[in-house]
Image (tube, one colour):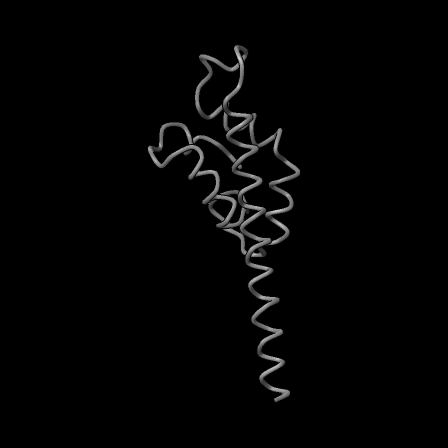
Length: 103
């Protein structure tokens, strides 16, 4: 009975942590979409400049996600795979400009 209770507690806490991690990724994606939407000042800028600007404006959300995911990618300036995945999902995988951005 004790083992069953322990497994139940473990299952509930791990799903709560996964939900919180997904929330962090959602917050970052929302922030990036908002900042990249931009106004008149950002029209005509290259995509890499828009991404860099959005990442600067969303630095708090990036930092929270980085703390939550301890993995790092050396070739991508030390960001986590989760942060890179969120950026790619917002920008798109077309490669037009994202390769030029140093995270």
